[in-house]
Image 1: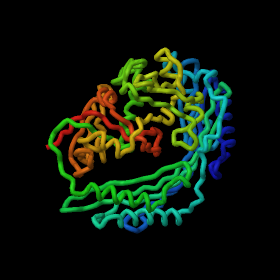
Image 2: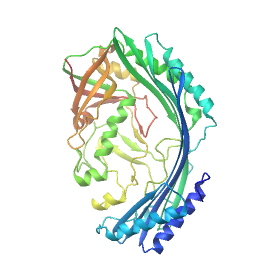
Image 3: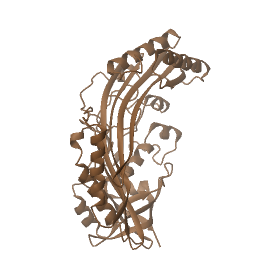
Image 4: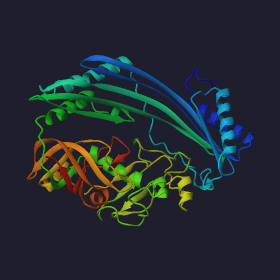
Length: 445
């Protein structure tokens, strides 16, 4: 196999098999390798003109060898045999000088995947750059025409990618899959009374047939921007806060870092030793669903080949366990949960209300429209983010708000979740509806 043609799954499997055999020949007691190849392009426009057309072709191979419990790793983006052989030799040389680490090694053989269902991850888009440019122009035009106060554009883009990933190890495991991802996005600027606001909208899917019309995405970007015009500031107060689904993903994302194996082992988490303890309100359930057809986080196996499986991560508010790959599982005296590389499709259970019903339930409070800054301390759980959004009075959405800070602690915020909506946002690996938190501090004027 050379880099002059696009390799298929069988090509990459053979390359991984060759690498593992060479590692053994060079003295490795065990080894693992992953290979990937992907192509795609993105067409971007701004102010009704083509701005960029970027093609991508990415490939790489990584190898980790073990000499007992000593580990060495190397990688290359050159898939020619000579370059790969050099990487394997470097990995073996590094392992000879590495410290002995009893936790280092391949995943346990009995945990590796043996079933590989079709998860409907591959849906190629029959689109050429010229058509992608047309769609991006349609998207931006709809945004610019959505409201007369839209005065500028940050651009619109249409992208598509198609890739292959293969993983193998010396337990005899080699498997791979092909996946696609397609997207449309747009961001525009509005102006009123000398003040400017910006907002965006996007769509992403493995299947292009599931993308909304680009004009619909663009129009929503324009309307979102227009709704933010005329924003004022609030005085400091403590009120309920409603995180719409696209912001609620980040709220749940902070949980994932806190219950990861590395954070637990280093005791660098606000949820250290919380397995079996209440973390959320007592009605909240969160499930990991790795095998959802066509979902962005679906996979039959993790980055170490361990089989993924459905599990209830939060059961009636109680944390049932951690997200573990083999290394930190051994450090903690536990077993891998099939989460080397992260979680797979976290599905947050709803309490049954629509977004409008959540607004009515909140009564008076703040709807988050945008969040700025990283402002989350993973060790203490302290949460403080710059925000813009909308003030709600007596269940009615009113004045747009800007230049405030919302603050709290994730422990209190999770336990204080009043409701979770049915308006699930599936544009990521965390699938949740809007989340209503009972009280947070708004720092304003």
